Length: 258
Image (cartoon, rainbow, N blue to C red; front, side, top):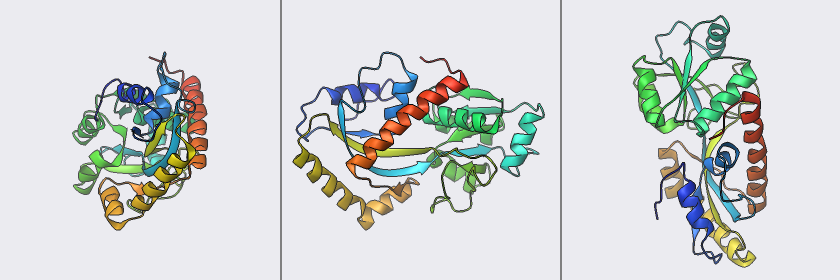
């Protein structure tokens, strides 16, 4: 049941009100935690109203630039240009998105003051970078990969602990001299809070079995996603850590919450 709207809040709140019987599940991505840190008056509690089942797959955010820029050779050149006072804009898929906050985390870690430009989608932002309307953007890989392959974009860094096996030629932020910028867009399955433990175990076991199948791995790879199954306990810890991280980033960056 696809219920888009309000940065996924509409669908999440519909799932929240469902019966905790294991027959209503929520496909949640990184916005599941970001929304609670960014938006006011969110009506759900990620840890009380939902029971984590497993992360399915994840992909790191990318910093991409217009390849003809004089500082497009490396992340270090980009940062040096920004610190020297050159005008650099960094786009995102919109205020409060994962691309926005990962960009703010990068700016904090790099000590960089450049201008954020929110778009209505990641696709729109990468199109403008390829066309030279703005200099750079944070993006998830799918809208950027065709333009990267065509040479119309240059990827300076991926926000991963280690290079993604699906994008081995793109260095990490750590390799570029900026530590701690580890942000993936993850896709997961959560159940309604209070789902019986045996039902949660059945859901987890069947989902992880499906994730391990060659067909599912091929489908994930097509979206630049690597399989990332977790136990419910590991996933609950991840949610708690991300809630704290994004609240901290928003405060440190002085972002006005919506």
